[in-house]
Image (cartoon, rainbow, N blue to C red; front, side):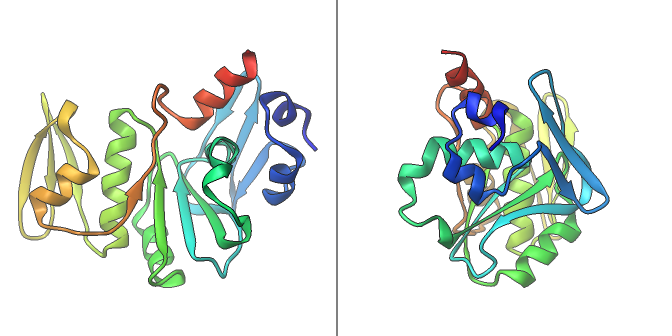
Length: 197
């Protein structure tokens, strides 16, 4: 067991599920590092994975630590952890990662766990579109966000942009759900806050 995770409130069974010893998570040639004072997440074309390859549900996050925080705070939603796989894509979702997930896990249930901020909502759109085999390009067109696909484009106010708004505007129904914390930007922020109490 890891002392930092235990202090944050991550139970031993979840640490075992994620096979945590130290807080260095491998994305192939790149790694994510976590400690009390810092968190370094790579921008990579590889992924970090945990859980069951023969899964029914794939939870996609931006970091391994976000995956651990998400399951710690939402274990009550999952009666069987052996039906879950977790994938972290790093700071910038890459088309190659999405193609690999699409081919590795055909017809699986996906849950996206990215932050509440603008970058998290843009990651929701990029990943969901990629899993639905739709390429999107995202542009900052102050004060709006411009999103282009092969056939069309739309501009959205930053405050109103979400995966649901994107799908309605482009006529896409991915069936992919998102899960976000209520009062925090990320589940890791919530876990750290809870650990200080």
